[in-house]
Image (cartoon, rainbow, N blue to C red):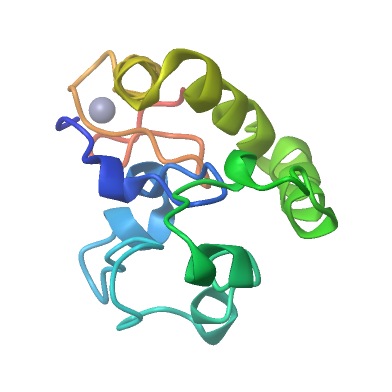
Length: 134
Ligand SMILES: [Zn+2]
C-alpha cells in the first residue's frame, strides 16, 4: 500500500485508508477528514467528527479531549472490536504514546498484503487488490 497521509487518520483513530468506502473505485470516499461528497449520511453526520470539541480548538484526535474515551467513541470502538477486530481507542493510545509517524508506519506494515503489496480492507478482511485473506 502507499504511504498513508496523516489526513487519512480520522479524529476517532480510524485509518480511512483501509476502509471499504475509501478503497472502492466507484463513489470513493475521501476519508473522514475530507469533503462529505460520496459519504453515506450516517458517515457525514458522524457524532465524533462533528463533535464540538473539534470545532472550538485545534485538537486533531479524541485523546486530546478530557472526556476521552467518551460514550460515542466507546460505542464505535466496541462495534469495531467485535465486528472487525480493530480498536479505535487502541489506535488513539498508540498515536498518543508513540506519535503519528510511528503509528502510520505500523499501520502500513499491518495492512499491506504480503502477496501483492495492496491494501487489506478492515471491513472485508482481505486484500482489496488480489483478494488474499489477512
Ligand atoms: Zn493482495
